[in-house]
Image (cartoon, rainbow over all chains, first blue to last red; front, side):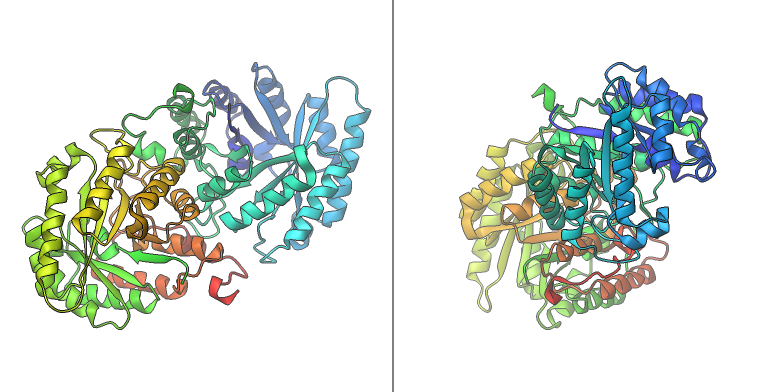
Amino acid sequence: MDVIVSEVGPRDGLQSIDRTMPTAIKIEWITALAAAGLPEIEVGSFVSPRLLPQMADCAELVQAANAIPGLGVLALVPNLKGAERAFEAGALRITMPISASETHSRKNINRTTDEAIADVARVCALRDSLDGPYREIDAGVSTAFGCTMEGAVDEDRVIEIAVALAKAGADNIGLSDTTGYGNPAQVRRLFKRLIAEVGDKAGGAHFHNTRGQGLANVVAALEVGVTTFDSSQAGLGGCPYAPGATGNIVTEDLVFLLESMGLDTGVDIDKLLDARQIILKGLPGEPLYGNVPDAGLPKGFHYARAA
Amino acid sequence: MDVIVSEVGPRDGLQSIDRTMPTAIKIEWITALAAAGLPEIEVGSFVSPRLLPQMADCAELVQAANAIPGLGVLALVPNLKGAERAFEAGALRITMPISASETHSRKNINRTTDEAIADVARVCALRDSLDGPYREIDAGVSTAFGCTMEGAVDEDRVIEIAVALAKAGADNIGLSDTTGYGNPAQVRRLFKRLIAEVGDKAGGAHFHNTRGQGLANVVAALEVGVTTFDSSQAGLGGCPYAPGATGNIVTEDLVFLLESMGLDTGVDIDKLLDARQIILKGLPGEPLYGNVPDAGLPKGFHYARAA
């Protein structure tokens, strides 16, 4: 596998939708995504069920997904309490978002960025105090490419936060374009610096397609050595044609991009397309996005692994 | 100006729509696009009005657009007869598509690729026989990245055709992803070879967004030195969410990509957005596409020229 496509639909997609997909259908969907070859899936969030009732079944999803052989199972954790719940549920890999924008951080989690970094350190200490298998902690610097409230975000500050997260004990530090503000030149600059500063702790890229720049940013990130990309099947939960849209890049289009460039993802696009039906079973009438699902694969298309 | 955005909406967009925008509104639209700072506009096609009645007013459009100070005015020409009409109308720059796929060429214009190249030579000879200002002849290798009938198109053949077009007397030779089959790795390879083989006769890139890869391909082309890109305002004439869609990349999203990367296009995005209303006046209810028009510019956005 040359590039890891990390599916975040069951978390980032479903948390943006106002109704709840039944747990059994979530498990059917996650199982189908894994069977299509996706190596990693973020299955849910250990946020308070009062805030996001759609995510209340996260413990059950982690347990079901852990039973799928070979699958990397991730869950989002907003704070120490969420980490305790995650580890109790058997989560072996958690991801914690830390906002580079102070305004966004205060508004979103009512803490400063430095307080959020301190929380990552506490979660790492908790992890280190536990017996059993090693539990990986991913930290994602959100609003790393700009903030809808602050506008531009200082690039030095983004890198400073990434370094602080590495020191706090996080295993992988990624950068997230939460707001769809990023551009390929900025993506090259920031990931190049991230890799230079935190070395093999440099994590993946989480891009949104709000302004249509998602895959363009992927091309730029690939150039400087990024090998993990988050995406959401069917661009679930975001509407690319609505004001303020925050849709993730579409997994189907991302896999096609990578495979057609000769980069093996291990994913079978036809099986991925079939899995869209499960979303509609769980959320009837939900709009599904993506260009490849509508246009189909080119005549004569072959996978990188067949080359 | 760092990059030339060459607007093809009045030609590639409108020729794909089954009804005709009134000539006066076309002129109003072209005038507004020029006022928004677009340096080049392909205003129509000198194809037979029996085949494409939407393009019957091309001579009138060339004359009106030629009167706009500083604007590069292009018109598509399918054959020698079209070139005669174009030069009579006062066209100073014409563009001729030559298909790299034999099947596409025969089906589209009932000629082999070599016959189409010979036609370019005849048009160049006609041009050379005329008095008055120099008339520039652009040739675009269409289906250069793949063909819906043949599948993969041989890259050596694409370059061979480009070289033959340069020898035939064309001034600029571009490559077109007519079918939306292209990927960034292929874009880098082909444009690198094109530039190596035809030098300063290497022309622009014409990408479609059929599979969502349009702007990703732009990033790859920029890297190897391409500085002219075709696009269509509002992605006119193509539906990115329909099977077989052939939409051009969206001018609004392309300009945002380039400007946010620090590349000056000379275009004012707000004025460009205003021009969308003229399309709707001429074609009521026509679907308009683009992510930037829906999401808006990021907070704190500034143009490359303001940096």
